[in-house]
Length: 545
Image (cartoon, rainbow, N blue to C red; front, side, top):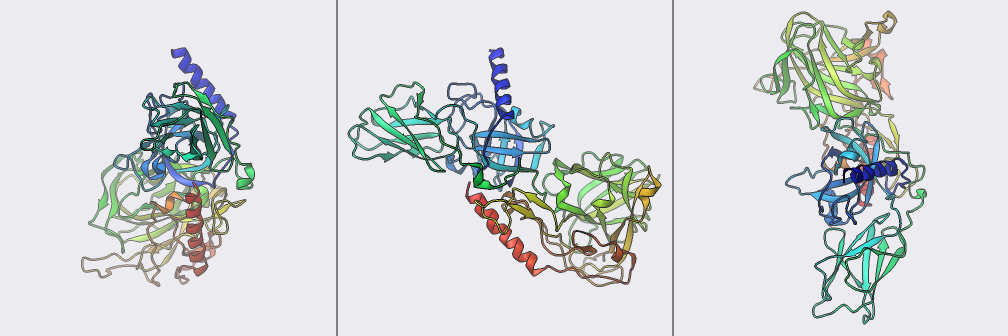
């Protein structure tokens, strides 16, 4: 029995490696995590993974929101994570009371999840996915359910290459076919009061993409029955120039906003104490809470990690508000394992709130990263507060395969342009300072890569500003929403509007050397229109599923 299980696993992995699945939709954003392989029938009623009607070990359980009352039973999806991609067949669903239902969720079997993530216990919050054809072998098959009778015919239909649109049955004495009713699963039922099914009966299964196959049902025997063939998957031209796979989708801009946002944690931090992720005793203007902790000595660091990693190509940097209980000269910001290439502010962190911008081009980084580190290099204990930590969206990030405002769900080449990020916290007063990127391994890399630092007014209980740098006020960054909108495209969670110190696709370093030059950030009307079109087209792509 163990040998048979190993053989099934090996064949499944080989089939996955040589899959010829055809993309049927544009790429979208969802969440993926691991679950157990089904040893018994899931809600689609296929039975155990290794049974005569079983779907194998590369399968997925969907949340109720995405399951669509069984319509997606038997559909295949390509799911992408930080490690790679896998193709899975839908076999089950998880109820809204148990699983998150604000966006598509894929709970993958161990054999499938190991293809997209190296950590079996992780959650990939920014998984990319698209519907694809299944790599089915042989014809569509069916089995009569054991509770069927001549007055109630129930068929399990499986091994379909693409989704089933409808199933009809026509008994020997019927003048026309009758549509069988889907039972919230891959089972379809015929029943008419007082009517008896006369055999032989003709069963026709129609594809969601056109075409149909037929079978003659001679009795209610529970043998495995075969249709005349399988559906023909649409040619790859349904999504012209589709990418080889979907990349990770764009993370929501907000990392910390009155609390760590979903998917972020501080568990990899070191040498710290008194951490409080919702400290209401001190916060910047426009917020109600901040993240506070004590960094204990020169080896201490706060590391904010995202489960399932994030893709850096969507962003030009990060922006955050910060203060300390004493002057801090040793702040270093870098990606884990890349501490030799870091960013440091050009002037010390003070006891007043200020906004800092760290351009990613001043850091050494990979396309996919797991965390961002805020390190202390001074041999003292320092109490710090951080607030409004956000990615800055790249205005020029283009990713093939995702919907944009000029493409619909059935269009050809689809690209996504990520809108530019917001400007910071509402109501802050600005003053410009420089930040410097440095490398401890090479003196040449410490040349003046600059970043922007903006002083922020603190707030008293009465709402009055008590301190802050000179300059003009900037408009506020809106918090990102990664619920329904984030489930349909890579960019819908990104606010629009130009970022202070940004021109085009990169940070304008020439602005950051003069404290007399300031720019109010504003939302571009064209960016708003573009973002609106993104929402519409992404909704169309999602509806096409």
